[in-house]
Image 1 (cartoon, rainbow, N blue to C red):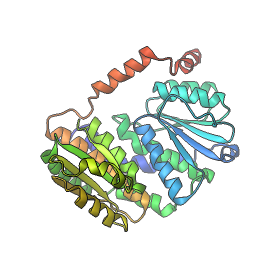
Image 2 (tube, one colour):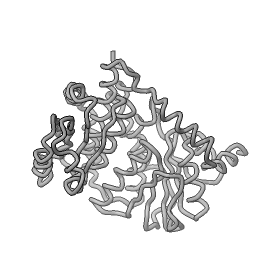
Image 3 (cartoon, rainbow, N blue to C red):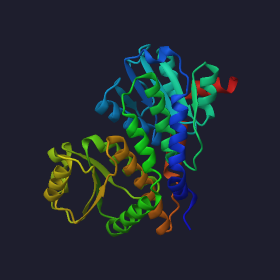
Image 4 (spheres, helix red, strand yellow):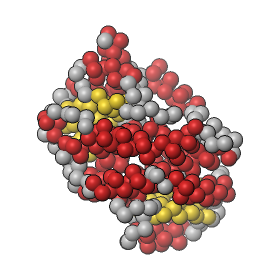
Length: 342
């Protein structure tokens, strides 16, 4: 019997994406929020991953440059001409709280994207707009809530130029549950044969955010370690370390477009892996293909965990690291104090 995390990925992502996109479009930010020359997305884990996708889409289709910060500070150049999204599913991520306070001090136009928590309370106290997102059984499963909320918001402000047809296609793909389950099942069968070796997820540069997301999903849900590589860059360095190893396994994210399909095939031939699996990304445009890879990552990683008697929701090492951050740093302390006063 599939667990609740798997069922959420499979059954709820399409609805979550559509609702989040509509909420982002109707967020109602003042016109001044469109008068910026940079956008910064501050977030850790899945929250930061949503920013990676937005940055890639902006680079490809055009719009205001989007930067992603996965740390406890914002760049010194952030100021009144910057729009900063402080993104934390729970609202309690210390690094993101610290970023929000610093962006606010530096005069940035700030938006909080969260379920609530300390970030929601702090934002309301300071008059910062809050995009409250829908629930999910785990923050990483809430990726469509985060991503599509910001996507809708950026489009409504005219800061990201993306064909509306791609947004619709990406959401419609999330309704192909039978196809996705079949693909995820095949991938899990293969993963079971290579676990313990050097697993590398390889993507063409435009689709690299999906490889990074795949790496994270396999780590958190399936408890599998892997790395993420992009071509052509990987062909100039790490390919040497991969070539000739007896335990190298490549998971290739093929966008089914040239020249990338040919380059990825040639990269794999040069490596000569012990085993490889090619995941063909569905869709006509960049966004649908990124979303398909992201969906399969969630489904396959949770399915792998369930087949191998693992709990995909258990993340003790992450919780231990969060305690370390709370005990050894002052990140987010000002936001916490101010939230407690509200």
